[in-house]
Image 1 (tube, rainbow, N blue to C red):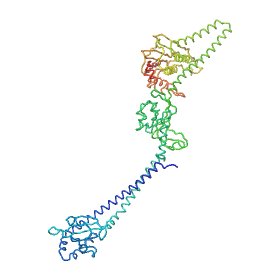
Image 2 (image 1 turned 180 degrees about the vertical axis):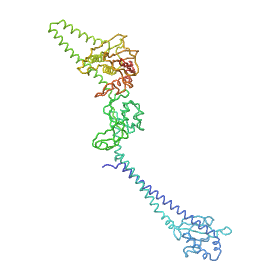
Image 3 (image 1 turned 135 degrees about the vertical axis):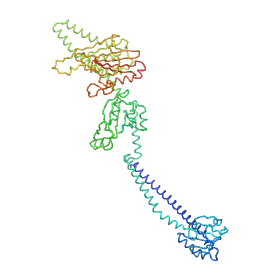
Image 4 (image 1 turned 45 degrees about the vertical axis):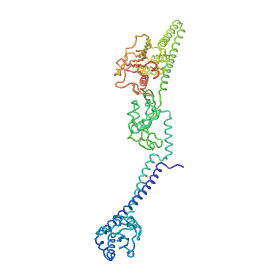
Length: 603
């Protein structure tokens, strides 16, 4: 059996509380009103008794042989005029001289008179011949100041209750109005709570909260919630780790934090505050590559019927969320973050192997053609020429491989350069490699070297490669002859200096050969330099090429503008620097990486 919801429980509790408070307040008001009425009656009786005691007529009547004959009519008149139940004039020995009931005249007064005999006026509630009454007893003094008689004036308790009963409807009406207003307020509040809590009970909300916390902190992805005001309201531990913000979970626990106040990359901050949807977008945050998915969180009913929510970026907070089942207000966005760093590094290494594999397939095709040529020469009886042709080709290929392997001690780096050399020949680009003699075996992690060198060479080949492959075959265009050159001279390095981003140069002239130059050097102890130059058109003007998404190439299925962002990420993580400059002769990108034990630990 389902327990009552929080709203129902609170409504019942509030109604009971209002009723109890109304009863307590009514009882207090009744008691207070009764006390006030009795006090007012006592004051009225005291005033009446005092005026009688001070009247000279009473003192004169007391001096006659039959005081009752004069005082009784006088007392009855005063009772009628003042709505008093009794006025009794008595001698100091309690003998009544007046009374509403003539039969009581001459009999002793029932009540307290000692304070009056002592000369003090007082009031009391006492049960006499007429029942319980509120009375005042005042002394009558003679000319010498002695007490010669007493005057008692009072009203019965029944009269007091009758007067109080006139106020009862007002008290009851006020109590009922209080209960009604309290019940209405409780109903409105419970209605609001029922809408907010979805009609759930306290136990159910507790379970939902426990499950929410368990799921939030156990998922392997980063989870971020941003409201419709662009404020981050929820984040789990993994999101704080991926975004490089250790205190993020504690920060958002106290209050929503505007996304603009967080140290996030511009592209990622724009996505979070934009309010749009994203699917498998790649963003570079600090030293990580993140795959980001974002969906709009809508009010109940917005996704009814399974319709997909569609909201344009920038619509957060104002726009409605539409779906096949209706419309609802966008509450914000739910964003998931996946760490793609390791996978990206493995992808780069796989790309290197794929490049090498493609080069081997290409060489296999070339060797097949050359083998056919050698066979044909033998068939024609030109064995010497066939032998010379085969020897020349073998010497050329082996010399290139021997030079690269001899110059670079790291085998993975050597394999990468051999693959890029073959790729450059296929794309009609002349690849020049300049390795300083003291380059040796780097201590920088090989995955970082592959990421930096592979992305820089790929970008340089894309920039420098001629466009003849895209031309019409009938226009007479043909690929120029290209090759690869390895220079091991210590003093032979291209004329390049690290510089800041500059304006891009003009389009590369078709008469200028397509070249890419790679420099591996050590400009200072403990510093490893990788510089890649190309003869391409240059960098885009006025933009940071190391920001994610910045590219001069058309977008593909996997997007563009990631390679140089990864290069900058590796440099930052290792504590190095990266610079780029463009001239009319092309672009040079220089990366300096620390090559010591601390750099290895940081990487």
